[in-house]
Amino acid sequence: MNVTYRLATQDDLANIVAMLADDALGARREQYQIPLPTAYQRAFDAIRRDSNQELTVVTLDGELVATFQLTFIPYLTYQGGIRAQIEAVRVKSTYRGQGVGTALFQYAIQRATERGAHVLQLTTDKKRPDAKRFYESLGFVDSHEGMKLHLTQ
Image: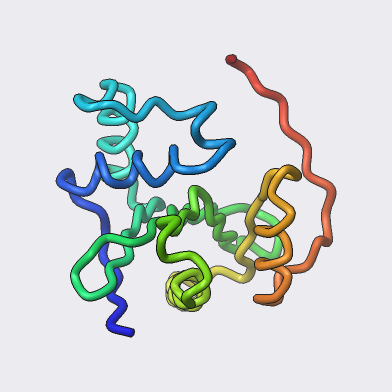
């Protein structure tokens, strides 16, 4: 499998949003249409300007097949440690179950380690039990209770 990783470019944005919208939960919260709503462009620009953000795309034999975003959070606990958060993990539906997700996480773990993070954390929606099982198979532990307060609808 010829998998490569690189930071997302402007040309990748529509494909990324299409992947984010390509499941039952994503279809309800994303708005994939061409042209894309301007909110996606604003978010992409903000991510690109922030040195603690890495929006990464995964290609397989030149085709964009997956994406994820790593956020590096400096904080005071753990003696001024760095926490890495992985979000917006998506593998194109036609490539799921072929090892792309596992390779993606191996790379994300490597990047987090290179940036000096002591932990890589994620959240997953309780409506995605298959994703939770996948993350557990990679060694992620359900060690904390997460809570969210949605500020906008």
